[in-house]
Amino acid sequence: MTGLRNTMEGYDSLVEAARAASKNFNPAQQRELVTEALHKAVPKPILSLIRMVLPDSKLKREYFAAFTTLFFTWLVGPCEVRESEHKGGMEKNLVHIQKCRFLQESNCLGMCTNLCKFPSQAFIKDSFGMPVNMVPNFDDMSCQMVFGQEPPSPDQDPTLKQPCYKLCKTKQRHSTECISG
Image 1 (cartoon, rainbow, N blue to C red):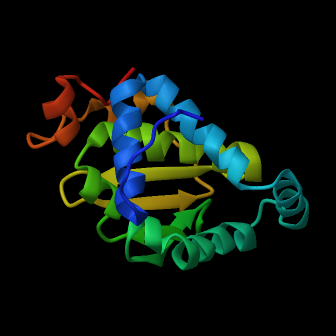
Image 2: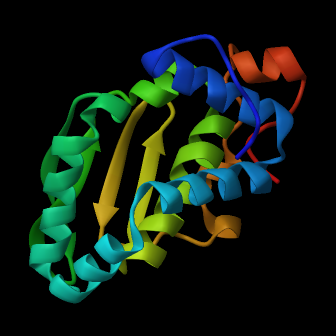
């Protein structure tokens, strides 16, 4: 897809590939690359089946939260399902990521937003019919994924108003404001 290669293995290779993408592509291109990769990773029949079998419901929102904690801990680190308010009732539709592994390893707000938050929100909604609002906390590196909640539009998203980390490795290497674009 990108033609980018590295010699690292495992999770380090993923983070290094993300750094290379953030260096070589503008934010919009980064988001598109991740969205394309996600579409290639999940077979279309699976997407159709999930949309058909799981209509929008409390069960679907809670299933997505539970699925995330079971199958994505390797990517984001320890996480747990929590309750949140949804349309006047309480549901277990929130995933609390205690300290995001990707954000911690990349140490870059731009990589978090352009290579995780925005493309994941778009992919999950467009492919599974499930809105999700990902709310990173850049102070403690935690994140909340609220299934069933529409994210704010990019021009209203507080994530894009955050300054780069002082020790951002991407900014130091590339002298760029990497978060918006």
